[in-house]
Length: 474
Image (cartoon, rainbow, N blue to C red; front, side, top):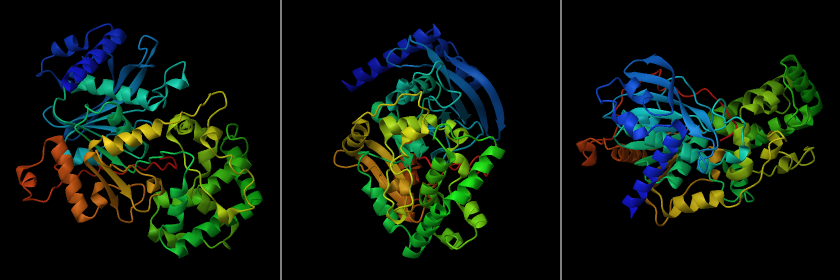
């Protein structure tokens, strides 16, 4: 039965490719010999187009566009071009399918699983993040199933070239994306490594986040951060004047959120969350006293939260995320007892506040519950990595009875940048061994337990750099 279902899925994807490109995907790649240049083989895929190739030592690196249906349920109703990059190592190596859940970086880089398995990496821009947006944009087609179907079509197109094992990975919203892809197309990937992926099953119940902020780090650090957050609201009139002046000088506006004052309150509410998302306990020493000058206080809030985040210009790039948070993914709602009497817009700051009003939004009950049930009871070959001090991990995925070969590991003291390298020695070895095994490249000595599992690729400072992007979104 499973074999028959997989054949039907393959047939459906093939029919979709024919409908979009007017040619058979099978015929196009079959006519391209394995000895052909890898660029020619990739571009022989119907719907694939070339943007540029960039030089990378030890690899070929391509920036591409792939024609996708705007609606996978009705592929004849329009298409759009979705950006892809391919970091090509060799066709006899495993392939890692990376998604950030946001825009696509076109700078060559390797994810941690790619380094571990010494493989190829295919990276995909999430639908509706520009320029990978249908025109005109029907926002109702921005959902987790449509996005998973984008990945499925890319996988099916490239699997004929990269025939070895595939792993899905991503961090934060990318980790969520990799998980949703696995739930809707469980047979595509041989394993999934999801980093710091939130799992907001019940959007109305967020007490786990409140508990996190009463327990993280030390009482002294928590008290210092709360005091600064409160003082930023006590001095809001003076601080908002500066904020408004900065916005005017930099041609920033506040039409979506409504006013500079509303934007300022949102920036301040992000302060403690942002600190723990990107800082560590050693940074507690840098938290200013509530008696600090307004100059110092303003600079600290900007450094931690970022005043640009809630301007129209800062929000625009993340409209697809806020749309999804307000329709399927959910978003944390916190209690702020230490800010009592200082909030002018309590309850205002939901995802709807960050999306232009001409884009309709309707909440879908049950989307995250479905994902959670699948992970708990049907998932297999999945690894979830969280940071001990990362607020996004307060609500996390938890494989349970019925799941198989699935793990949840927590990196001690780590924030939203948690990874396998930061795990305890035993968990690091276990996670690395599983990733190698799922990719089909575990050395015999590792399989026999005679050697400590290690990444197969040599370190590369350029390709293995950490992203400098700081987002308060997951």
